[in-house]
Length: 361
Image 1 (cartoon, rainbow, N blue to C red):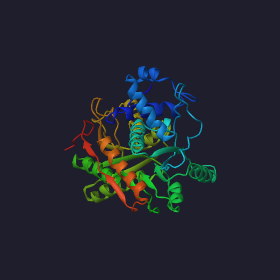
Image 2 (image 1 turned 90 degrees about the vertical axis):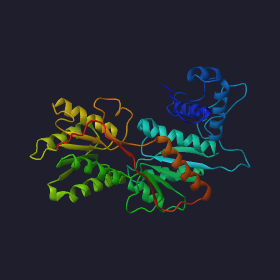
Image 3 (image 1 turned 60 degrees about the vertical axis):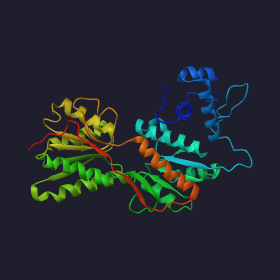
Image 4 (image 1 turned 120 degrees about the vertical axis):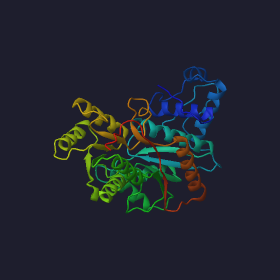
């Protein structure tokens, strides 16, 4: 179903919705007519027309007066004499597989850039199967004349490869210690330290961090922050363990089985990734472990459902539109100046207490 993201100009919102339909292969060769799109998205035909012109600027469609607008198999080249500013978005998975929150901020970011005359192109890069991914990236950068790449949730290999290039590059996420690139991310280390201290202040002494064994810099930073807070309170009997899993429900359940069957079953869980929060909650529910009566829980990341369930899930939250605005400003600086200093730009989210942390007093 097509959904229109909020708080952008209406044509930009409509453009984002149509772009999603194209990316998900809803329309492969031609778009529906303006009247049909107007009915589908419940907006006026002039608004649809303005959105189509935004998409044409991106090179995503070809407007054909008197005919159905075409979705070319390859990006439309800009007219001679115009400067081409193409920003490449490098993702480890297709847009159709990313979380709703990630999809929203990517869509808003692309719409804002399009309004500034900057086109975006997505390439999926999974560094597996030898060095094929390197050839894929080289081909993508060369054929599309990419002006600036943005690495989204990129692993260390991809980050290191781009760090050796002369292209101005921004990491959306955390940089690995061995990589010197500008980055923009949530302050996962400080967030995780804060979560551990929330548990400790409520009287919890046996803590666990449940995190994907991804090697992603943000997850590594979470481990460091959580463990550091526990170590600082070791004199008070605080002990923290890190539970790494492969992202599947089976792996999470197996790891939690080992944890809760041990002599040091935790009274507090800090869980990364919204999808894994729900896996953990289902695990606890099926085993009669009540939240927060038996185990307290804080989610590291935000999800719109966390505040609508009962009890509301404690988590860290921030305004996605503020995030996108700051990110877009960084990207425009990178595009216009052809340079960003290799420093970290961090956001510390707000803690939403919810009702899943018990005070052990």
